[in-house]
Image (cartoon, rainbow, N blue to C red):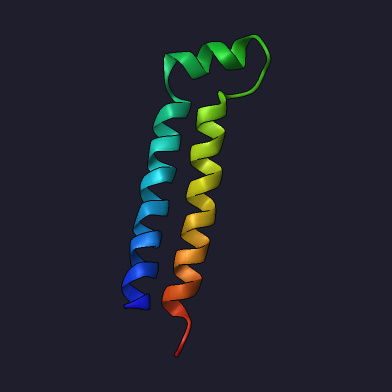
Length: 65
């Protein structure tokens, strides 16, 4: 059961990273980078959340019993 949870967390992390990359290429993010020089908060949260979820999911899935 735990392996299934960690694999789901890993998949969720990859999906969040993909959504973050897509959000970073959006028009809204381009305008946000134009004026203050950084991407939108949504983009940052998607990438950070995806990275953390991926790391935790991978560590949990590879961990032995």
